[in-house]
Length: 160
Image (cartoon, rainbow, N blue to C red; front, side):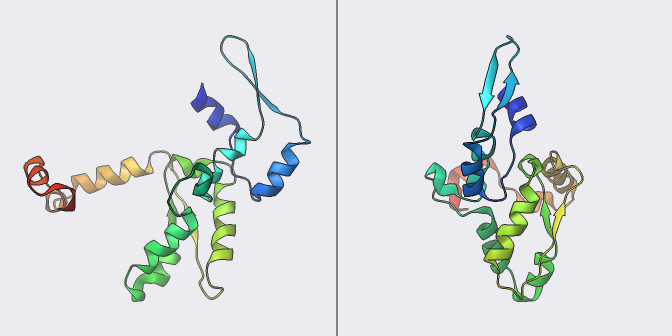
């Protein structure tokens, strides 16, 4: 039921604070559960996605997604950073929320220096893209070069 509610009603707001104010005067979304009972859903529709951009709302000590993208790209060799910024691929089920791409574009535009051009690419199958990528990687002949055995892990621990 929760997954169905999330898929049908949740969205990413373009302006969280404005959306909070607007939600006070707007009608609630309703959802009928299998028993026939009605659930009113209001701010939960967009509050559940806001931690992507403001993880502190859940007291998480992690970066907002736009800052994580920035830091990840800037840790790469300078010569390929521009190419990486031009090919930011949105993959995974969480990128399917209505408004996700628009909000991420807004946050990156405000966060990045004006001379940095970027491009967000929506994967055609975002829900399964991580599994598809993992499957492709696992089928490559070089896959075993990037794995460790349970024995190696037990001997060296997570720092291996």
